Length: 390
Image (cartoon, rainbow, N blue to C red; front, side, top):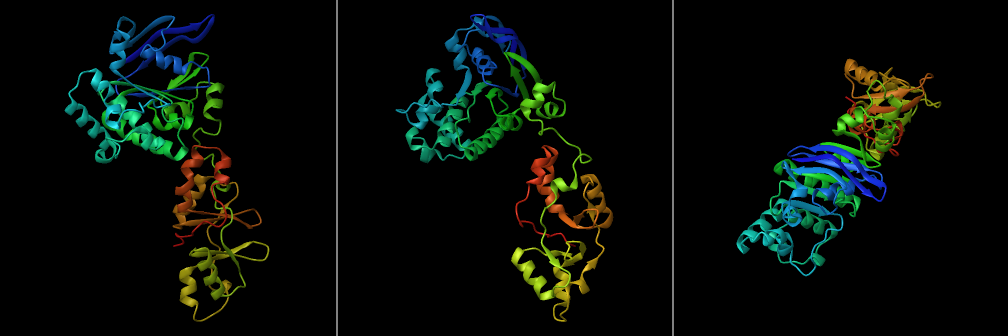
């Protein structure tokens, strides 16, 4: 769909893009990413001839773009930029229909298309068609910028950091919305970004550039698993690579401060502590924080009327994981013993933390894709629930 053949762009003696070769397949979203000055935006703008190359060829649908009239070429290619570029004196309907008007569409056709596109991003046409850009939020304006690029149903869309100026929450929402649109429409998209998180989320293929050259072009999973060299590792983040469950230790993902109670306390105290911290089990420890057992809300409820001490009703010698065990070992212990939690202890059997099925679900994927420090900071304070005690 888009093919770069030995493309170079020089400013004086400096090559901003240096003998670049790249294929973008039909229906594929390819992100160009790299440090400032790497040539990614220049590469993008040569496709619709906003920038003319110094040498080489670019083919769109097997036609050399340099043999085409630039104005006609651009009318057939959608283009979205960070600055949005909506016309302030035009309504939303008129902004969306700019290319349709140039293509001499009828007014009814332009209106129908604008309404269709607004509904695609959950913007009520009755509310928004006749508004002006100043009446919209930044996120809404950027949606209109994307819709304008889609209006004439181009097969190719160029996007130059389209969400870069938005706040993180709005940006994440628009990324998700656009992914849904792309899944439905399967446009061929060349997408410039400086954000690796965005590239990983959006791309079918990531093209990492340096000094005008392609360092690596690969699907996100492939780039994470097999970075081409140290530059790729450093750019995507040394802690972002996939890690095996055999490489992740229990102390990286455990809840670091599970709710405890001393062995000599009463059942009523145990019930009150559960209520206060909204948990349904307590780690029972002695005065030296050595794990003595576990008591659940069921055990307290069954014996509360009798009264007595926690130590008389707790489950003794619970299944435990030890500091230094891997996640794979911990999961195996939980399965073998049919338990929903694992206290983590040190060599002196002092309680260090707690693993539950919920904690595994909540953070394991993050840890496997990230560095150890994420797992260690994955929980703050006593936010855990031991909801799977039985």
